Length: 111
Length: 110
Image (cartoon, rainbow over all chains, first blue to last red; front, side, top):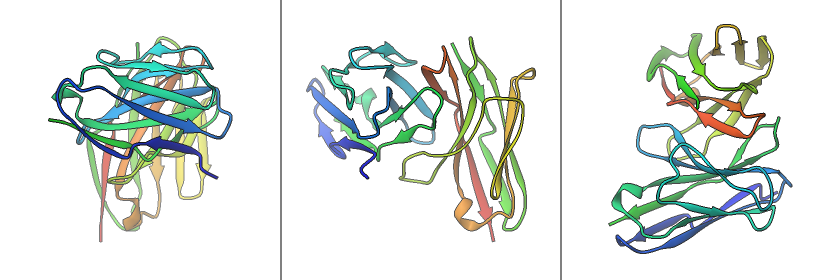
């Protein structure tokens, strides 16, 4: 049972480069989330989606875009990466009243 | 918006009991959850309270008081493997927006 899968697991970007992080879930969950976690800090919500074709902004959306074209996939894009976006990114999925399942994270470094 | 507060660090010895508090402010409320995260790992679900009272799951219990906007996680019979960060999280907007607290780092000493 795969659960929530994030790709890639590691990435190094140069300032100004773009990239897309992919999150895939096989639990038929309606809700999906993208968080970032900086050293010694909590999880901050970037964007979330409550269903296919819908997205909404979280606490720290600036510099990121998302898309949910298929129910099982939630993509996070960085159009022009900045060193401040160096972080660990976690994707999660759930239904409205169930626990959230997390992917193993993507460690992104922007130099 | 939402905001959550937790103590930043807690230290206890093996076999002891520890309580991690969480206070929250939210524009709506749809339940309080607790997650555990070991260093280098992903958060994993521990407990969920939608209604007031105590929920017990093995060595872990969680409590909620909606009138006080307060909850806690109680860990009993502490083991070394319980050393981790613990996060409370709230849902609002009818369960859509899912926001985490800053986390409490628990260190269990031998």
